[in-house]
Length: 163
Image 1 (spheres, rainbow, N blue to C red):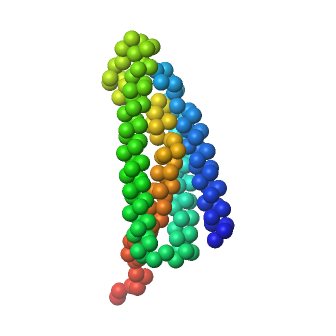
Image 2 (cartoon, one colour):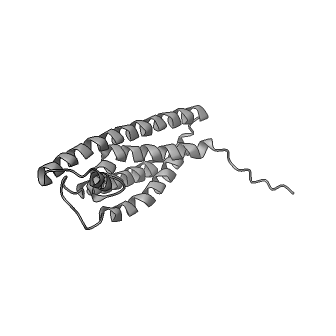
């Protein structure tokens, strides 16, 4: 069990470092960037690590032998955390759009609203700090735990074959 915990900790720290690295690749508000988003290359590393984290959480839950009630409570709490994180991120993005708008006005004297929406929608270099920060890191951890809990709630398929 100690090995699983240590491995989970190491992977979590690696994912956190990747999140901080992606966060640091955010373009300065009001600047233009034509190089695409090189941070997406780091994101490619996060995806398999997420699945490894789910598998490790699932093994840890199995080793602790949590009751169905404890798993259901865990599902509820992780869902609430993910929901609260999403609401917080949406509010933070709205505030960050205002910051970028002010920077554009200071730089050009005006802010084109369509341009503002274009650079702050999707996985652009202008919003890396909105999608890859401490909050979203903990949301990823909660989501991996949530998926691991789902693993135990879904009914197991019976291996019996009907003739």
